[in-house]
Length: 181
Image 1 (cartoon, rainbow, N blue to C red):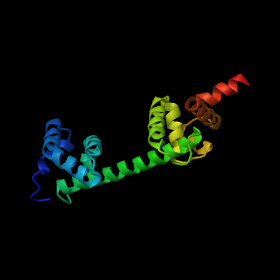
Image 2: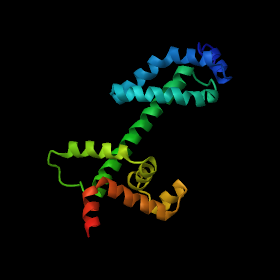
Image 3: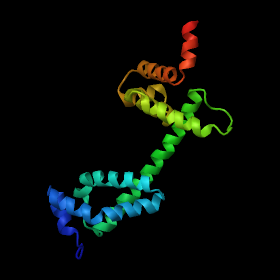
Image 4: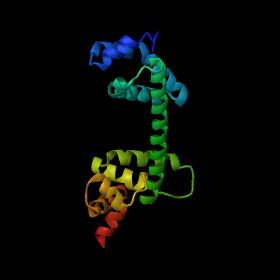
């Protein structure tokens, strides 16, 4: 596009010029952060999204065709990143709710829900990444054990064992009782 002040930097960055890419980021980082903050309403989310966009930009810079100004194209990437961030947040919230059921925490709201959510989030963070990945697919994405197994490249019995292990780790009191039997 004629008149795009970023076109030369974009072309050089797409060709692998790190200095040009850095110049683009310096020129537009505040805009990236500002748009993300306005869309999400949260500074912490905006910071995460801005970092994600910077990383994504490394991969996408070569796909800029110049049909619009670079800033217009970049704002579209930021808005899409905000939507993805929101979707991930909703998926995580659904997963936490389902995990609460798995861990035997699902009871009518009684003021302790915040504590339970915090506990569950910390417990999920402590899980081995393989267990956490399995939980995300089975509980968060509502896949069957067979579907999760295909996605993870493991046997269905492995997914079943992992889910058993997650339940055991999240509800150690139940396991202690079972061990005594």
